[in-house]
Length: 316
Image (cartoon, rainbow, N blue to C red; front, top):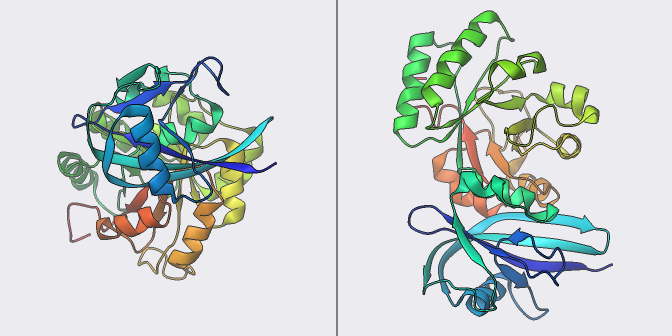
């Protein structure tokens, strides 16, 4: 069965809302909501197809777009490759040129709509930022909390509370304080045993590669309404993350790092190859920072993750 190549768009307006369209009842996956787009013809580039489809479907002209995610999905009757781009500027007023209902939706509200199964990673990518802050270790609690507060004030929306020394009571107390700082402003990702899941209902969970290897076969340990992420370093771990049903991963190390000086870096080319075969958002980690976000997008990643490059106190 030939895989159908589809160009699709996450279109944002000036307020950050995202445009979605309802599929006609007589279409494949009819009645469900989708991100606008359509089939890439044999003689077309993806960007040409995207521009053509959005003009035909919505009456708009794309001004600014960049790669967001590629998703391969196999339905019982159809195999698709969704080549998704984020459109941040366009000309014209979008309207359902083919009679399809449209809605502008806040990213957090996308979970309230029914999408085809192939669209679930796109929903995740549309809700995630391009930068993922990981807190440094060896900081006293007051300094760590001040740094988190400063990072949030600077626009960071996704924060992992790193636990390099195991899951001790001190980390739990810190997590309580960090959750309070992040409430309503940023998404906190905690690391810890699954026994703690019920104690931090607003937090997502970022599992280690060791946890991934131990628990992947048991499936997803928390509800779809909470974020689940995993640390991955190779194709085997990415496959386990897929099996577990995580929402996104970090892939590391891309380049040599001070944190793990002995780890063999993947390099940009290998990182891009690994992302190509993985249909979930990926943050590249290890020797990267905000300056590499465009390069990460070009490699197929959601964005970049890091400690030193993102922490507001440069002395760390």
